[in-house]
Amino acid sequence: MGLSLDDILASHRTRRPVVMGILNVTPDSFSDGGEFFDPAAAAGQARRMADEGADIIDVGAESTRPGSRRVTAGEQIRRLRKTIPAAVACGAVVSVDTTISSVARFALDAGAAIINDISAGRDDPAMLDLAAERQAPIVLMHMLGEPKDMQAEPRYDNVVAEVRAFLAARAAAAEAAGVPRRRIIVDPGIGFGKLLEHNLALLAGIGEIVSLGYGVLVGASRKRFIGTLTGQEDPHNRTAGTIAACLAAWWRGATMFRVHDVGPLRQALAVAQAIDRA
Ligand code: HH2
Image (cartoon, rainbow, N blue to C red; front, top):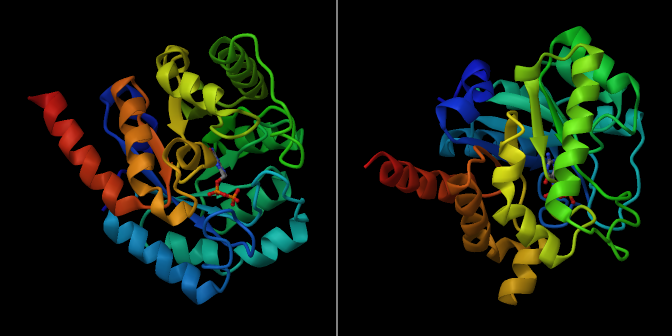
């Protein structure tokens, strides 16, 4: 059994690591597109990740890989209709990966507990109000540009300081809308408008983001920068690199990790935690 929602929200104080398993109900996600598009396959994957120790199952119905196109609210809801209840039935806390408030509202009504908004409430102005109204924890992620153009020459003077300032501003906007501080989770958005050097600087400097005082989620799983560093072209073969990125962030204070390969990360974290305690 994974952590309760309260334990998840306290993780940056208790240092209990939180593993968020990824469930993409999409035909086109960069590493698992089409694998779990069928509701029965999605339910099976949710069960597998819960059994492997996922605390959260993050269900998304829109790929946001570089160059991807938007999916309408109606289509996202159609894709989520069977899968959100199936994920909830596994006993894990469920989050919904969407930037559209009507989709998030549908997911919350269907039993999801957390909103994961990669636009940090900028795509849909009603998103922060929804989180406040429903007292739903919300993940606010940094992205430079939009998925369709975000990898076209992203530029920063100081990527860590700029991402930190952005997250502080979006968290302040969420608080102003009525979301309690402890229900806000921030995420540097690995791979969203970032070159290799930016991703590495953010992982190395994640302590600067942790110092904001919110829970910090890191989503490095199978991403392109791991392929660039290792020459591994097939995203399915990037599990070891993913674990290295998560552990580096864990030792710098981040406590939440969004991954495809739940079991291997759980094992790595068990060892890292034991070393920390020794
Ligand atoms: N990354 C992806 C999607 N959602 N959410 C958060 N909070 N942080 C992330 O880093 C993040 C995210 C992209 O990865 P994936 O879901 O594997 O691919 P796709 O967008 O192609 O479905």
